[in-house]
Amino acid sequence: MTDNRTIKAPEGMLAVWRDMYEWARKNGGDMPCPRCGRRTMTDHNAISRRVSVEICPTCGAEEAFEDFATGGCMDDVSHWWLFSGAR
Image (cartoon, rainbow, N blue to C red):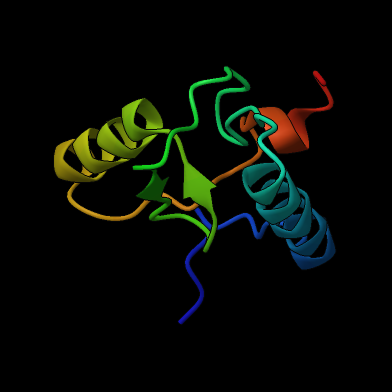
């Protein structure tokens, strides 16, 4: 059964993001959170419940509250900073 709420994240874009994030982490740079766009990424990030990528702790908590409030995982990532075109 297909869940109509699900909007898939472009895997190619996520792969590039992961590479950039790892490079920044190793070279002392900072990266904005792919979900909110704020430069709040730390050494203790959360793993998104939507896609397999690290997000800032605040966004991780927001996703947990969203899932609790809706009774399940809402996979729409179109509002994420990384995918919205607001960069």
